[in-house]
Every structure is written in structure tokens, then in C-alpha cells.
Length: 165
Image (cartoon, rainbow, N blue to C red; front, side, top):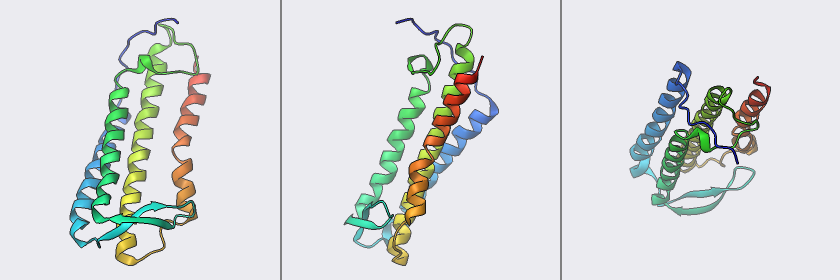
């Protein structure tokens, strides 16, 4: 197996803005949950079915599972982005194309991280709103959106990577 060049792609302004947005979402999620924690009832939704309806309940402490998982995912993807040479690419990586391919892949991971954090924030908000407003949950349209949205940057950046000369 050929060794891929170890090149650190240059961060553009867009990359920095995506990282900043991700941090803001993560911090905002923690703050939102901490602010609303005292008002939560003893039992809150812990799982939603495909139609977005709550189908399992647990203690209000379980609300912290959402930002803890989001934080671990954020950190994992953030750290993974530091080593683009270990990732799989749809194209063979050479010294000539490595910088561009790594830039595309790390951008995709940043966008994916942002989408994941936004998804977890929506889940936290909807979970807290469910208890406050006794709503029915997410609704099917939001569940479909949550499932499809993370696939979009993967498809987009893979197609872009393949087309790159």
C-alpha cells in the first residue's frame, strides 16, 4: 500500500468560519440544556421512532447524553481532521494532488461536524420543547431531514474529489 504524503492543508476563511460555527453550536447546546435543566420534568423523552414520536422515556439527567455524545463526536472529527493522510479517498493520492484532495476531505469533515452538531442541538431543543409544550415530537419530515442531511456533504465532496484533476 503506497504511503500518502503528510501535508497539512491550508485553512481558508471558510474553514475557520465552519469551525467557529461548530464551536458556537456545541457551546450553545450546553448552555441551552443547562439553562433549561431545572425546569425539566422528572421524565423526558430518550428515544424517538421514525415518525419522530417519543417512544421511550428516562430521567431528566438523560438530557446530558445529547451534549456529551455531541462533544465526543465533535472532538473525534476535529482530531481526525488533523491527519488527512490516514483517510480513504475516492482517488489515488499522489504528491501532486494531495494538497487539494486533503483540503476537500477536511472541508467535508468540518461541514459534516457542523451538521452533526446542528442535528444534536435540534434534538436537544425538541426534547426540551416536548416536555414544556407536550408536543408530539419531531414529525416525520424532520426525522427524514436528520437522516438525509449528513449524506449531502459526503456525496458532494466525493463527487468533487473525483472530478478534481
